[in-house]
Amino acid sequence: MDEKTRSISAIWKSKKKSVEECTELVLNFLLHLKDYDYNLFGVWYEKGNSKKKALEKKVELSIGYIQSALKKNWDKKFDDLGARISYWTGNEDEDKSSSISFNVGAYGDKSFNKNSCIINLPQEYKANEKDNYPHDLIDLMKGYWKPDKILVNGEVFENKVS
Image (cartoon, rainbow, N blue to C red; front, side):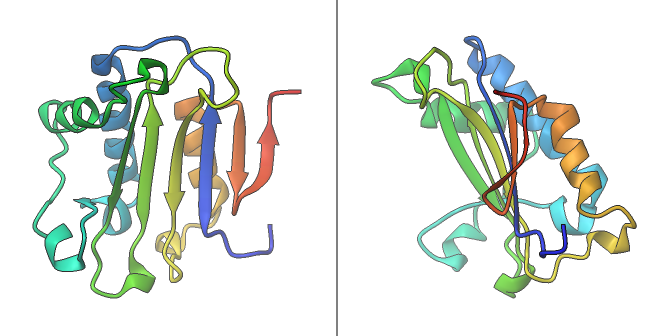
């Protein structure tokens, strides 16, 4: 993996999960990321129409906040598509910001009923000089989400589906 890692995606199929179960998964993963690298993943903001508006919407890492976001974004017409939410780290310098998006609660046999967690890393990401970067972050995502597929920079890194 000589190329600089810009994004890591975990993709998986799942049985139907409640909003409460999805809330717990998303919140706990955000807390794991915060522990992994507070400088990069410690503070999140909702995305907005402008940087100024977005910086007014700090994400609260609590069950109530995340559950409210998931309920608000749950597909009203097609329950099997779940909910999509996205956050970013709000750094003044865009090259130092990261973002994360979740599609959770999707279920069923249709090819588009997939769950995902996608982390977009900043251009200047050095993972606090961690020796095993980016494998440690990939391992964190694999261990937590137990995905069917991991993509790095949009290319298949690991695929459990034959």
